[in-house]
Image (cartoon, rainbow, N blue to C red; front, top):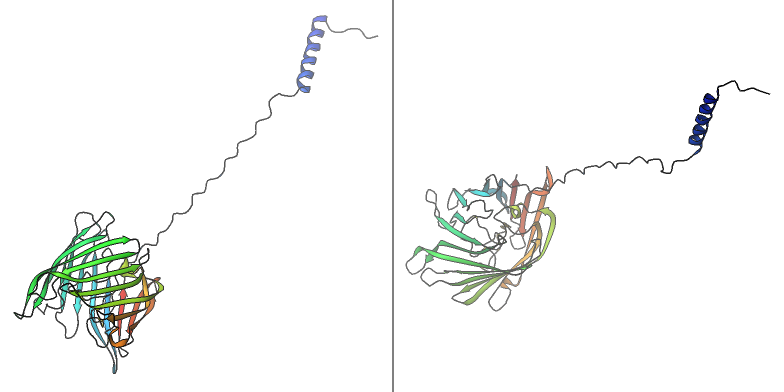
Length: 347
């Protein structure tokens, strides 16, 4: 038999150490092993690039006669902007036998307002070379920056005295629904007569500013005269650059006077002149370029003048650098005998 070769106290120490070691190596921890925390990688999305508007710098207008085929430069409109992209000036240059050669429309603002409170524009009927006559218009707006009133002094003919006189003109704008606008005009059809109700526009449109129908009723001393009716509008996909300006939103132009007879840039429609149409067209309202529409003149008794509407056709060529904008539109009308008006846009 073996004999104990270790002293009793050492033998007891090693025996205790062995028991502790075996106990620790065979027991399980009550707490589970920690699981490493996974952190998801956050990817910042790229910034949204807004479709910022392209602002027109110049429009060149040419009249294209069909028989014989000739093209003559007629008018240039040059737009000038401030740092807020507000129109502050419009240079108007005429070519050929016109009433004036050059003039400048000036637009004034109150503080940082995006809408002009004063526009000083040339009178295209009364100005002559070297003597430009300007008319001044003052504007009032509502909380949505919609025009609610404008007032001006304009040159009106006095047939009794055979002279022109400076007379007031007022326009009141109401918006009964999101798709209807009324404009009531008060002024002078004849300078020798008192101020009276001279026109009402009834505009039906979409919420994104596309004209659906426009009726412009003319009056003389509260009596209905002829009226113009523009309807059956179709649009192409191109953005109308004039609708992006801070002076957009009217169916007549704010950059020259007078515009008492004007409908979408045309003051020579059959409601004011029963003759072949002159296919002029400036649209400061529609958000898209119009491709076709009908414009008719009617008597106060609702008879269609000349028994026909004028069918307007607008052909548009996209701008090569940004194909959502036009570089040129060409306008023709059914009784224009093949004549067209060409508008070239420069940005």
